[in-house]
Length: 544
Image (cartoon, rainbow, N blue to C red):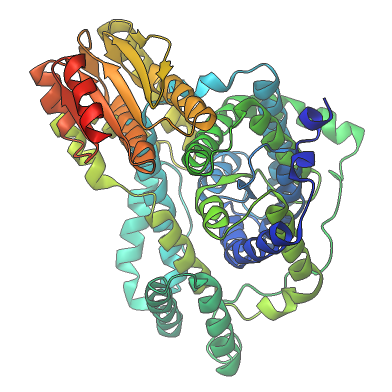
């Protein structure tokens, strides 16, 4: 019971080797987190210190009460984008009302996450198909990247809402290009070149080094005073302010707005869980740690509530930092505690050193971060797999652009459309209970493998992999398999990758020739096809 209520007790007993590994991994992640946290706070339309605050106590809470040994909780790009898209429709970025709503949104998201975890509603994430996610992330990333261009070239314009507003902004940029602040653009180009080159060196914190070098340049040439360049300026030093700073009457007055925020907050909860699900599944398949996603949802909720009470904003699990934690040799969640303590040192002693950092440099960091979310080629390739899902992805993408800055509407529209398409046009499918025999896990697919079922199948397979080190092959009997959507394909691709780490394979038995050619488009090296189960057994015997 104690281990269930206090997951961090699983870290003990410590030994010297484990302690050293966690400390080194924690410091490594902090070198990435510190510049990321400020950049992502800027994405959310909040002061830079809010990002550092979000990396401190929420990261600590996420580490202590989460089940994963490697999940890094804190500010992330997608949650920051969504936070801005929700808040900007109710208040002006930077205003006291905007800051207050950020805290309220963090508390609301935290409460919803805890409820989802306690009542085991994590399967709600299965309602979001892969084409919808991709259409939304492409749209959101494009909007955010475009919003940073003004800081790169030093032209600041009045922002407008909606798709037509974005078109109007683009027109204003073109008209005013001759006003480009040359020294600001040069600093941005220097930052871009440095990050691009440093990322080619393994293990180097490219963004952090770029920030340090551009701060030195900015201070040496008096970028702010002589060239009238914009810098991030003074960041408050010390511990974050705790509490909401609202009296009883103010809380009662804001309740109607809180009710209006619930649909958007629920969308952020779903997307945040998908981020956590994707990264923890990938890492747990390699580390062998068995995951409890309901517990992870509760811990993420506690972290977000902590953010609401510590002058921060909604947080989530980071894909890049979690992967870095694992690759850096972290053994337990104590590594994330070390990361939070490093952020505390920055808050207490180092914020004055950041004064001269040019805003254009942080804008470059944001653009390069969201650039990784853009997968337009993948979205276009959907045409070759499924016309319906291509249009679903494109409609989600367009909806995200049209409803900007309220981008959560884009993904909600995509979810509704995908559910309608599935209920009206697809027959229900599923799979049988997986059976483990030695190194082979076997199951049968009934009729279809769609986005609603693929996450369930992946979860069951990964749980079996965590329990059995011998498991190397997944046998799928697909005689009755009639349809696999793009989410199903993506799930099969993920399973291939996980089995490849064990030098195993994904084997399909007795699928139709049309389905075989469809699956082969994934180009997975360890995807095998057999006409009969006896052929597969013969293959296993030969392999031994």
